[in-house]
Amino acid sequence: APVLAVDWWSTRHPPTAPGREALGAAVRIRQRQPGEPYALALEVALTLRDSTRVVDTLDLRERDQSFELELPGRAIDLQVDPFYRLLIWRPEYGPRPAGVE
Image (tube, rainbow, N blue to C red; front, top):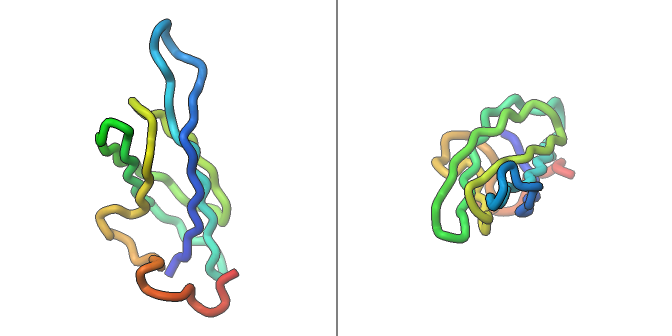
């Protein structure tokens, strides 16, 4: 099963229209399991400052990939596979599997 290391941060871009703030999130995902990387349609849920939740799907194909997401507000949280559709290792399962870097 894939073992994912996810880093993310809120971003601010130059406004696309006067008076409109352009916000987003940068997401970096690394597949840490041995062997070839998996091809995944990975859903991520971002919670915004006003409690709105935005769900997006990332097309994960490489061992190390970065994504830029445009959002209607500032992100304060990110959850990977929020609906538990994929078989991936999760911290609540215990220690990472042996052989994972």
